[in-house]
Image (tube, rainbow, N blue to C red):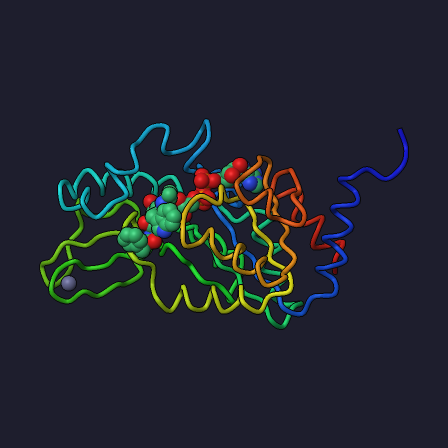
Length: 250
Ligand code: BJW
Ligand code: ZN
């Protein structure tokens, strides 16, 4: 069969908008790191199939059993340590160099966007590579040791250290939220890549942008709650689709 398919048309519409835009925001989720070997949360192979979120990713779980929570986070750090950014991370880092008003807001805690060279970056849910003291001093600092010397790890002040990530029921960093919503308020195009669009407030970013007329492009192999709202939903894997899209828009 010849002729232009609706997939081609969607791809071309997204390309044209991206080419013309001077303010672009990208929102990423676990799917952008899937092709680097990082497991997603939801879905058939997802982390929440093996573990209950409320047993491990809540402040109550940490209070109840810090060692159990730390065993899970330590095993994720070990699995993550040798993994590398993929072509989707690289394409987003390159886009930052071409677009003056660019911001990448990620829900990921894996550090792979920074490893790919992204600097206009907001890590909405924190980082697996930073530990924060829940004791007196309250300090957070980068710690890339794998394995950690003791579980649960302790701060120099004697307090327990926790992963500096955002658990369910916890507030996101106010500065991170305000930068991300600021970008969503002014972006002409919003790219939403590899997220199930279920977790708030991150899922509200493209909604807010769309409400004031931004063009929303979703890249995801599966349908999500955002699909009905997005101007274009490109069905496919981030590491294949995103470089092609951003190269066509260069
Ligand atoms: C591919 C692919 C490939 C696969 N290429 N794609 C409003 C309404 C309803 C509820 C709430 C609301 N506001 C707040 C809430 C409560 C809650 C919430 O949203 N709950 C919903 C689940 C209902 N939110 C919160 O609690 C947040 N805090 C907050 O709002 O504070 C204020 C407040 C306080 C008290 C009470 C009320 C409000 C905090 C949320 C923190 C989320 N934390 C986690 C864990 C981080 C640490 C860790 O890693 O352990 O963050 S949960 C987990 O989900 C993680 C992720 O960042 C987040 C999002 O997941 P993501 O990235 O979308 O991954 P998946 O697996 O869901 O999806 C992967 C996608 O990739 C899929 O679509 C695949 O198809 C796709 N894919 N291969 C492209 N190759
Ligand atoms: Zn301390």
